[in-house]
Length: 129
Image (cartoon, rainbow, N blue to C red; front, side, top):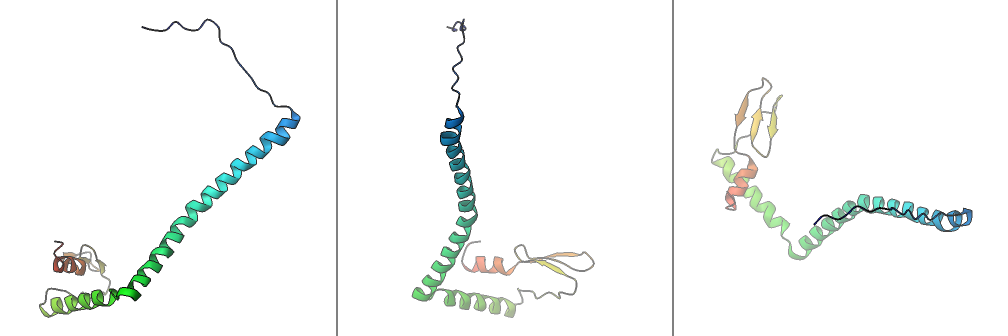
């Protein structure tokens, strides 16, 4: 059932005098500005700190477990094997551009060739494709 609109509207207003503006409201406004500055600083520095922590964790894990070198060796072995089998192409880069993720090569005349990239072979080696 709809409500009946109000007959009378009362407005309550609180006014601050000179002392309240100077001693109460101004410090609150300054605190708000400080909070904005701190938020901005956190949003700027947090990704930098997170990146540094990730970098440090990566190198600590490598020094403890030595897992980067086996991955490099596996990568190099995959590259060598696919080069021997003739599956991995080595393009002539005179004016050519290569998209390493898709393996697309565009030569200086604008001709596009679709090949498998090294990333594709590596993912196939680990059974991801």
